[in-house]
Image: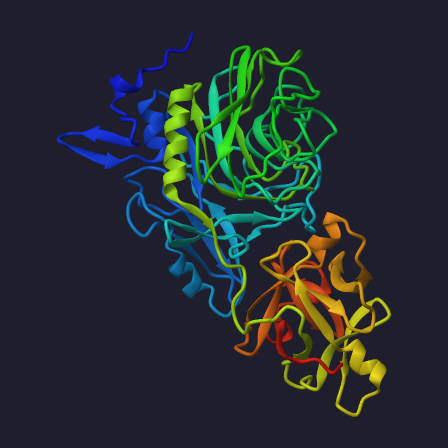
Length: 505
């Protein structure tokens, strides 16, 4: 039996404060867990410090202009990340999140996930890194960035220390974007195999978030908080439906999974307000008692590196020991008090829904060319006021509210109403809207101030490392460096910057 010190004895007060010698200081989530007798053994966040005294690095970014890196720390000990430092460092270029540092002191940092049983998308099998600007938020009015992870993106630590192994008890929580998910395997945060391969039932214990229906499900159509225990996503005692596990509709979600010998639980709630609810608490599924956890840490992927899922991570921890509900309730109050609010996804010259626009290239030598299309292929063509009516229409686009995210925009073809610019295998196409969520995601773009100082740069919402680019007069959703020829960093800033004017038609 694992003892849990009482909250009264350890000095945690109901207001999320810790009693120290003669004073009270605001507690961070890991201060609360420690006082509850279940200390954090990993603590990850790009938005804030998770200990009241923590002032070290939260995460590292690498910029595309020269591949140099810098660490981002909180503005003050225990505070919100210094987003201004990132913005300055990444100005007029792109940035990726290369390391998410462990604040626990155990060195359990998360880095680019290596190849596994399911190979990554990159040429060397490693997963992709997340954009540093894909998930802007504010915490009590202070700007920060989360980790927006597209399919193919993943972070991992296969040599973690101090994490629970075998049937040892542990707790997990994560704050996630409740609107960013899919049904692919597997958007996880937590305990996984040290080999990046599936080594059998019970070798994982991780938070899952999404609407995958291959294994267990909750009520409704999802998404659900479930547990990935390897070879099954579980919403309860069995790999089937648990009607007490609800579909989530919160913009910010607190997701909790915890386990100890023949006992585990799922809890969750709105990370912006209110209390936690318990969606399951009971015995382990058949075949998963005892557990055989291995102690590696994953983010955004499954234990075998299955990386088809998408999601957004803001903060999360792993504890050694099975936290009490009372401890978790205090952690939830701390998360709510952090004041998460979604941030602005767009910047630069404003677009007006309903307007007809043209997009002129700014690359020297190509400034008479406009984004157009020939059939379904997006390309650039020389267009003037004396061009044919057909060409002028092919180079004109109607601005509509983003089909996949209303904070951004989609671009409807003037000459083919009902068809939109979208990326497919990172080629830009003009396709008819089929009404699927995938089409909405792939056809939504978020304008930013032009990376070369001119006009706008149009960032893909669903793949925020990628931007509308012309390359050899063809349109792509391109990254600043990568395995595709159109990802060539040469002239990238010019090729992704567009002057937006009134449409030709």
